[in-house]
Amino acid sequence: MTSRRELLCDTAISVLAAEGGRGLTHRAVDRAAEVPEGTTKNYFPSRDALLRAAAQRMTELHAAAVARLRATTPAGISATQVSELYPALLRRAVAEDPTQFLAMVELYLEAVRRPGVREALGRMVVANAEAGARLHRAAGLPSGVRDAGLLDAYFLGVAVSLLALPAEALRAVGLDDPYALGLGLFHAAVPSSQPTPRPSAGPTSAPSPLPPSRNARQPLDLDDDQDDGHGGGRAAAGGACGR
Figure 1: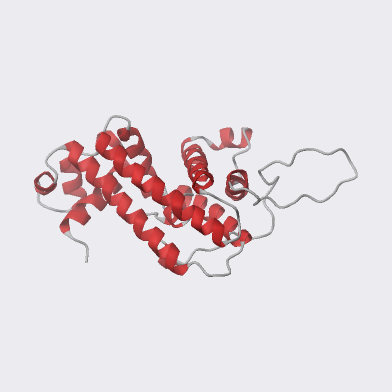
Figure 2: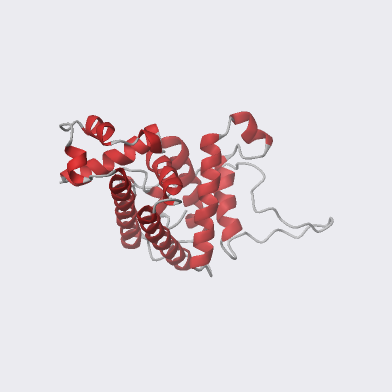
């Protein structure tokens, strides 16, 4: 059962996503949570305390998703199955339920000036990277924490672009295929994950980390129980996000 404190923190995350950092006030959380005015301020006396609580709650949600990942990853998971997670996670983060991702972006901005928020996000990023490295190694890939952390950073930047830029700009710079982007992020960051190109009679050229176009395969569907209901699929991939 969700406690009053957890309810307020979850509501603060939703308000951050909907209204941005400047829209996060005690009264806004009270209204959205449908609690008496002054309730949020009783729990979190200052705006800084409210932001720190939201960041800590997001860290807890990610930790729960990572724990589920560890418990549900099959022993024989393949590199192909792992790679297919990332297009699905990107789709979820930007199209299906961007609430937690948008809130996390707002918290990243707040973390520049608020050490408490920075510390909470730091713990989340490290946990994501460690879980991502474990997932990749389970699939037989020689991946480390740095690779998973780099993948997390790639994912964050691409997801922000997909949410913030107009469709014509995304097409102009080749960011209009989320499926290809998700695979490309994985192959660009994780060693030995890129399939070996077939020999060609023509001149040799360096393969691009991004697939040229969407193929007929469908992204791997994630079970509902892998999602925490707050967009936690990014964390469930251990760094790809979430955030």
